[in-house]
Amino acid sequence: MAKFLTNREESFSQWYNDLVIKADLAENSAVRGCMVIKPYGYAIWERIQAELDRKFKATGHVNAYFPLFIPKSFFSREAAHVEGFAKECAVVTHYRLKHSPDGKGIVVDPDARLEEELIVRPTSETIIWNTYKDWIQSYRDLPLLINQWANVVRWEMRTRLFLRTAEFLWQEGHTAHATKEEAIEETTKIIDLYADFVTNFMGIPVIKGYKSPSERFAGAEDTFAIEALMQDGKALQAGTSHFLGQNFAKAFDVKFTNEKGKLDYVWATSWGVSTRLMGALVLAHADNNGLVIPPRLAPIQVVIIPIYKGSDQLDKISEIALDLKRRLEEAGLTVKYDNRDTQKPGFKFADYELKGVPVRLAIGPRDADQGTVEIARRDTLTKETISRDNVVSHVVSLMDEIHNNILRKATAFREENTHYVNSWDEFLDVIENKGGFVMAHWDGTPETEEQIKNLTKATIRVIPFDSPEEQGKCVYSGNPSVRRVLFARAY
RNA sequence: CGGGGUAUAGCGCAGUCCGGUUAGCGCAUCUGGUUUGGGACCAGAGGGCCGCAGGUUCGAAUCCUGCUACCCCGACCA
Image (cartoon, rainbow, N blue to C red; front, side, top):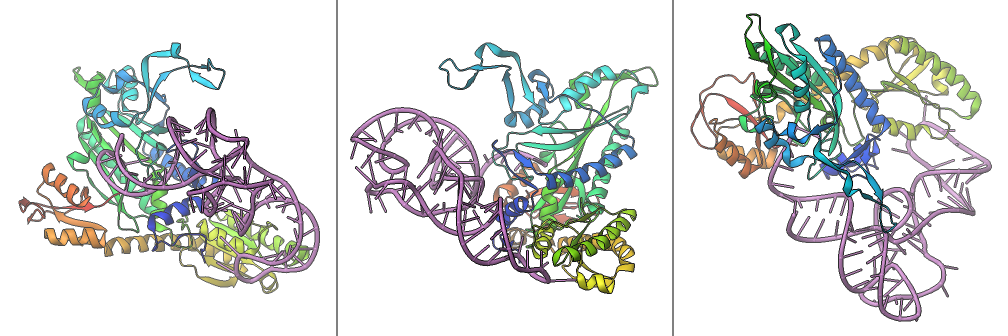
């Protein structure tokens, strides 16, 4: 089986790259660092979008759209922000091309230089806050709860499909509030929403927590993140929510009159998840046979494959299959009937396994005669034959069962690979030899954090919200610490 | 940006050292037939500015010069 994929055990990163391409999620494009998201991959992204969008709207947010280009001057208004992003920006300097004077090809018209260069957005805080300035005068205009679905560009040195691409798709929420407390509440609400989504829709357990000051978003006062553990023992940041304080309000002069008639700067948050979640899906659940998509996320939840000789058999089986498809769809499932005559059943079985379709139904002449159907689960790779009368209710309950099993498996993996260490030797041993999450005491200084990173490539992923107070000594410096923080090597 | 590598059919590669008729192989594609309960088989066919631009030569995928792109390893990052 899976002779078309590199084995995970052989080379994890090669396996990942192979899988993304073979499962038709995405491929490299003609443009350095930019991917083409293929229809099947995009269908999964659309499922992510649809569910998140529903959740955003259910919590009072609305969508809007802001420009791709940001005037250079906007970008430098917030000091920490420009510091954090300046190095990786694409810049538009000209607005016209012309035929090359030597007659060969096209050149940038030197006469068409922009007075002020435009930055291709790496994130939209600056253009949005510049706009909010005109939208907000009074406490009656608040809160402003806006989300945008967009593409952004960060000129990364090294890229990998989904995990780090120069252009990526994401959503970015940008909210404005009258009080600090309300903004912090929003920041928390969103990180909870993300955690709920990633856990209960994507089947990936996450740790919620605070980023250490050095890992914070450029311009944020506090960054909350959810961290997930991938199958190779590396951590992946799956979503972030930032409390921006009044930094952007001050930088863009966004003031409002409060209930007492006094002028004040508004309080801000921003938050986002990206197509990186697609990478998380692969890295968290896939196996040597291909993708494993949790049912709630799957663009195709059930595939029906006919097994037949000749068109008479196909006709008979198709009638059964189409009736089954209709009944499953009535029960709320997304079903594909693959009656292509150009591929054999065995090919289709392998192909839908590669694509991670949660449930496969096969109907052959035997099943047609006996009133049965073969049902196969992607998560366990088990098969059984059941009566056609029971199939709809069975498949419906299987959806939850498969989701729970995938989440349970990922959670168990994380438990097994979370190590509580109390000494530097232990820390090194786990990071170098075992991988996974490391819960260890840290003295709270950026110097120690930096040293640990330089020595081990491990970083503080989060200071977990639920990390209990506990007296201890920093694994590196030996200085006192009051709680454990989560270390790991990360994507 | 430093170190290493690669560029030949849609994909993966051989050929390049040592220049020489018509540039091969596997997969994929197309046609016909036989097949169909776990990635079918046989027969045939199509597909190439050998990364780009110069140069050397009677002759260049092969030698020389310049350029470009991509990949891997580092420093940077969601």
